[in-house]
Image 1 (cartoon, rainbow, N blue to C red):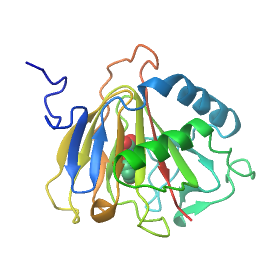
Image 2 (cartoon, rainbow, N blue to C red):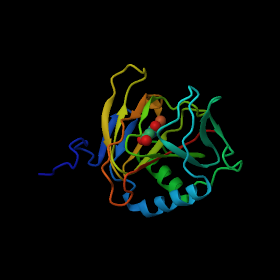
Image 3 (cartoon, rainbow, N blue to C red):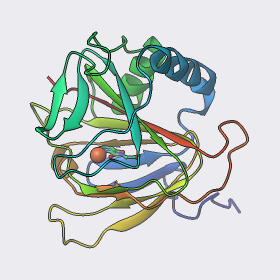
Length: 217
Ligand code: MD6
Ligand code: FE
């Protein structure tokens, strides 16, 4: 008998957790490339350090963020938007590492989205207690392209809801190396992350790094 590691994968497709018609978790998909991905994060944060941004509502985000690629997601009192320039340095965001792009294009194809051409990557850092409230990703110009999300470090409980904020959200644990791909009919579903528990990771300690690779422009 084969035992599933997390009890939630599709028996016909081991290592996959189907979240919706066009959304899937690929368990451990990024594990073979972790060294390159973490090297990429170090290169990015050397040029564009993690910072806590303000929401338009006047709150400071508990998640610290930075970006790479042609376009970077930012928030301040004036709203959410993509910008070519890092407002902190006044310079363009660091280039997207090849390892990020390759992983995203391959994972997207694997999930049924061939021809993904990303131009933006938002890198989030969570510490114990950091959370992300339910939201939709809708600052991108067209919703035809999927979003590829990579989780590294401490596990998190991801919330995957429906098209309305009040729709009941499924709870899906995400672990070091997991990749989530979603798009199509699921592209605008509400989602978030529960407050992070402190379960130090052997490599990354008390943090979780998540990056989401997108076509924003
Ligand atoms: C996170 N992810 O996992 C937050 N958004 O830390 C997101 O907000 C997200 O994982 C769009 C698509 C995939 C995601
Ligand atoms: Fe999101």
